[in-house]
Image 1: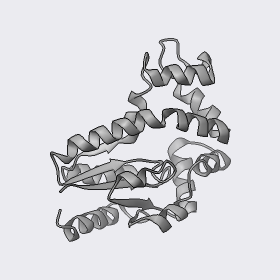
Image 2: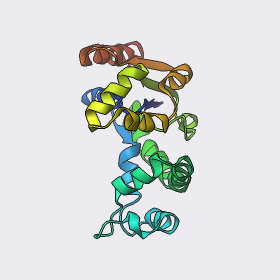
Image 3: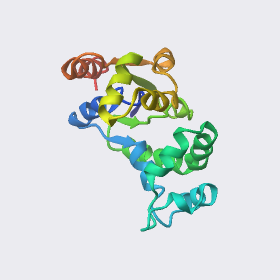
Length: 197
């Protein structure tokens, strides 16, 4: 029987670090961000819908989605962000479910990496949820440094997701990523050992 672990966090919380540890241990990863990019490639039904909703100015000259332009528009507008998420949801969800079903045949543990796991009710699709947690001020500082943006821009991005505090309250497992990479790695490995995986 395969175990499906959903991993989520917040922007700049260090979720990629945790995912890379599972990957190093050889467990398959279903990556919602990779899927989200694939479903909006040129000539896809999802991209056609996005263009009809947001206009052709969100396309690059070669027909690809201009992520930066779309990102700027949706981060500033809660309604547009919700419209985009609603529009893409069925395409992303279908592909996630398909990949999980395939990987369940190959591994006793499948990791599903979903940034908006709680926001889009993906916790229904997994056995347990692990949240990668950092305190809000650390998250803010890391994001400002990583993206070279102002405090207010970073805060706007953070505010577009559920707070890490509320995700932490709902989580089955919390990986605290406020220390060193080694400390985070130890928590993940300990969880793997305790679950005999």
